[in-house]
Each structure stands twice: as structure tokens, then as C-alpha cells.
Length: 374
Ligand SMILES: [Zn+2]
Image (cartoon, rainbow, N blue to C red; front, top):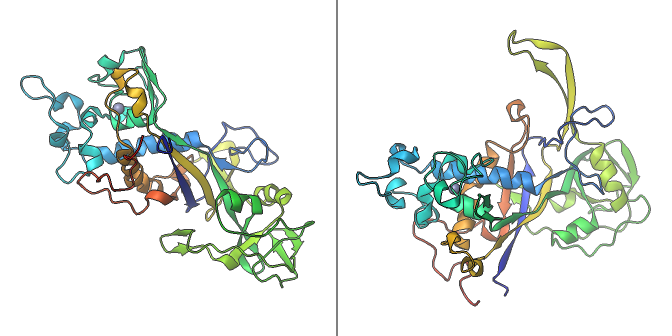
């Protein structure tokens, strides 16, 4: 039973401001607002955005391993009309998660994004030039919907919520969080939430501290957070002494008054100059924000028998490696809007598989997969 679903902790750090818009209604002086939690009003990265972008990045990663001649699906058959093997379509150094799953031979760029052929039946989609193929690791992993069958996929993405938020203080940058958020992320802290409008620091002797423009009293009781290298991204490591615990009711207030706000002007594509009257402001999650969420992969082996159209499904190992090895695109292409204005990049780390070996040979059952038991 425990192997039915695997849960993974995800930590991420924004290396650019990240803008994920709501389709533009205005709050206060900001024209383009970002997605927020409807109850706490704290900005977040919705799981649906993460899933959509990650789906695209796995397709890109797989395409980077396809031999040039086979980019076009029409060339993947031999002279007597049978499909070449997946191992022939991809370059020799391709990892196991690509070449061990035979259905990956049907992958196309259109397996990402919205399906433009949802009214085809699954069988026809396999060799169609456009639309989701309904057969490859991406379609099986992230889901698809065809005329005769809908499949919700095997990978679930939670929202990424802000765990540590950077603010300017007279002591330099500090990252605020709350006791509840630390607990949720499984980070060790025996503290209880600070009383009144006080905050907790590692020293406890600052007297007062400004968090942005808010000036708050520091509780003498020190916080006991110890991250033990848990929050580390490349050469950035969050230090215990840079963490400030604030009361739950102040968190949203502090975050929302310290977002990145940019003023931009629309460019007229014909003149290449600024358009008259087209000045607008946008807000974004600032660079250096640390987010937390989780991913779940469902082992749906037991579903396959119900509808054998779905056979075979990719293994959990293959999906883990697909996520791990496509993850680097978030660091270059990013997520959300205004990516041409220097927004959107972030580093994502999936804790349980960050050190997983995804080389050529398929992982052995003794790996981190879930082949044992029922
Ligand atoms: Zn597909």
C-alpha cells in the first residue's frame, strides 16, 4: 500500500524575480498582479503552472537526444512502414529513462502544451503529426484526454509556497518565515510562534529590527532553527542566523509590501519606440525567495488492467529521472511571464532524487524505486 504513491519534497529558490500573472486585474497601484493564495493572500507558484512548464521541459530534454533525422515523426519508419526502435531514434548516449520506454518513439513537440487534437481517438493519435501522442512518457506521466479515453497522469504537483522570504534590514538581508511554515516543510524548530508583534532571531539581542519598512521588536528568546545544510542550492546556502521568525499574521503583510515592483512600457512593434500611454507596473516574487512544495508520483500499475489501452505505463524510476534531468531548464528558460525582461528563472531541487543516478542503464530494483511489495 505504501508503494502506491511516492511523495517528494521540493525546495526552490528564485534566481530572478518570478511573475506568474492572474490575467491582469489591478490591486492598488499595480496593474499586473500575480497569483496569490485566496485565503492568506501570499503569492505562490501554482502547481498547474509548474506541471505545464515541466511537461514542456521534459519534451525539450527528450528532443535534445533525438537524432536530427528523426525530429519529424514521419521519418521514424523504415521502408516497409514499421516504426524504428526507440533506441535507434535517440542518440546512443541517451539515458535509460528515454530509451528503455519503447513508447517514447512517438514523442513530438506537441506532446507539451495544449492538445490541438483532443477529438482523435487514442489509436490515431499515436502517429498523427500534431496533438498529444497519448503514448509517450510525457503523455502518460502528465495526462492527456482523447475522444475515447482520458488519463489524468501519474505525477501530481502541489503549489510552491513561500517558505523563506528575503527582506532588507539594517543588518543586511534576512529571510522571514513562520513556525507553521517550518513545520510544514519538516524543518526542525522547537519554537512557538512569537508573541505580540515580536520576531525571533538567532541572537535575540538586536532589540529592534526593520523588515522592509516595518520596525519590530526582537524577542529575547532565540530561535532554534537549524537547517543542517537542508537549504542549499549550488553555492548558495541559507544560514540559520539569517532567518527571522515572524508571527503568522504578519507574514502576508511583510511579503506583500516587499515584492519586486517594476514599471515597464509597451513597445510599439512598428516604430520600436515606447507606445504612448502604455506605461504599466508589474509585481513579482523577488529574487532569492525560497519556496516549498511537493510532488507525488502515483504507481498506477493496478489501473492498467482496467483499460489495456494504457499499457504499458512508464515506471516510477523513469518518471523520477525525467523530472530530475529536465529540471535544469528552469535555471535557464524559467517559468511565468516577462521572461524576455529578465524574469522567471529558478532552481528546483527534488530532495529524494537529487542524487539519483539516471545514467544509461536502467536502475536496478535495489535503487530508490518502489518495485518491492504490492
Ligand atoms: Zn506524447
